[in-house]
Length: 319
Image (cartoon, rainbow, N blue to C red; front, side):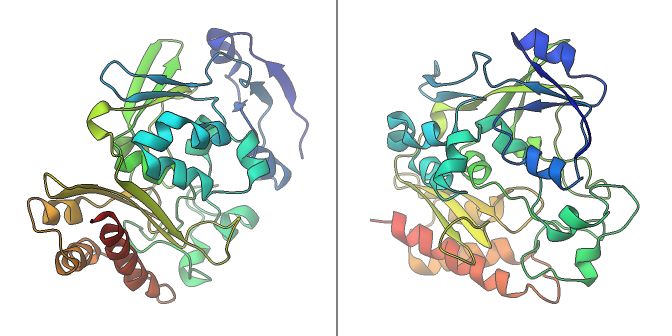
């Protein structure tokens, strides 16, 4: 690990001023510190934001929730309003990492975590140095993307939380020295294209301050399911966050483990609009969404797995 400076921010502006010149924000450090140890990240300074007044879950004016960026994953999952209004979010958080890591990891940091592609962690690739190629495409890729990938990168996004937040139309709030801003989570992660090193749409130096769940997305009937290679402490092979509207005959659906970013299943949602909520319709909706899948030679199984998981979750939500 290379030598670095450490600074504890006194307030948000103090953090923003300190963040220039190769610095990185430090929340729980559960991803960043590992990457520093591996030599993937080499910040000149860590700006500790953990003690800024950005923690907690509060009521939004429209009946939704405002989740502070330094709220721990454990506190988020246990919050009664989250469990009651957005149960899939609580389930998604509890499906990630271990209890010890959830006690440290923060909401803002979770959204900014980087891929767990083994090549990214051990070799130079397009995500680390543009123009150096993607070794996974010709190498080991059984757990890589089937949607939205390009020849520049086939890695998948690791967050469980972000999948559920996407299904609920979450909005990310941030601060810069020029003032505050916000980005819908659906636009927060750019398509991989030929710039896989550009992982978010945040302006340079921006500090994530909160995530907002709109009142229009409140979904007591929602669920998150995750298929992984071992029972715990493993990233998703495929995951599904879904919320079913029994009155409107529609659903909110987001997928994890299938693309470089959490994947909103808009095609499946449109298929379900005003359709009868039957097993046959759920299967057809899943197939319509996955018709665009382009699996690599070693991960075609994910297409069927994702289809089965979408259908299973929707059946579970139907009375």
